[in-house]
Length: 266
Image 1 (cartoon, rainbow, N blue to C red):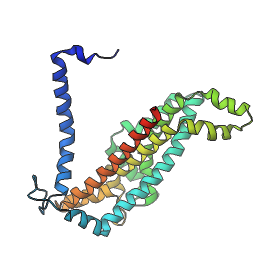
Image 2 (image 1 turned 180 degrees about the vertical axis):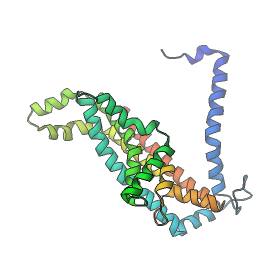
Image 3 (image 1 turned 90 degrees about the vertical axis):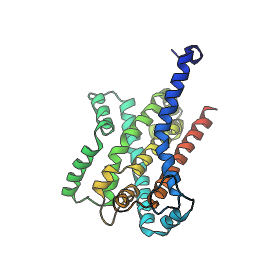
Image 4 (image 1 turned 45 degrees about the horizontal axis):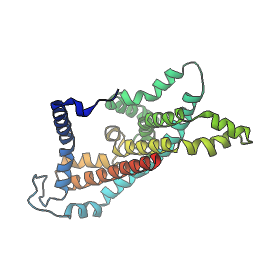
């Protein structure tokens, strides 16, 4: 049953104030970082004494930051592709097939969402050291893939559960092969779920820092690891500039997702 907001009387103002305080608590630190990235102080000083674009110029002129951003982008794209493909196959099996242990397998795919990240990071670090994958692009992709797969499984499973399989069967009866029916009928119908899976898989990889710290090497660092390493050495506003650009990309992707969802609902 939906709550009638107008009938709450004075309580609606209390609830509104609580919601506003919660939003401020979550957003103010982010807004501070954005402001610090434009401040002309050599240190992270708030409020800034003046305004400048100097730190963005230093950021874009430093090849170490560019390389870290490029590494994050490469890993994110590879993780996204693998996550959507493997997550789609897993979601198809979990929603379409009846077999013993299906719910156990579903829980297995969702385990990385509830497992403490630092526990997973230590475990994957120890394993990859033995396999010789520590500090490699392959190791980064595999580690981030484990974290991204649950989002793909959830998003694509949700889309498949709202899709009528009888439409796919009708395409087969009309002469299409099972794989052709899935490719030309099912996949276009669940494209919103596939897009959500791709979006969240990329963001999970792009923003991940705990596992990336364990997997990084002197020659291979993602952008979050570069921010963390620089933060331990120097409180330069370049860190705020890099964080702001990461935030801008994340917000841009979320805005794109919202626009696509709005277009779909019309």
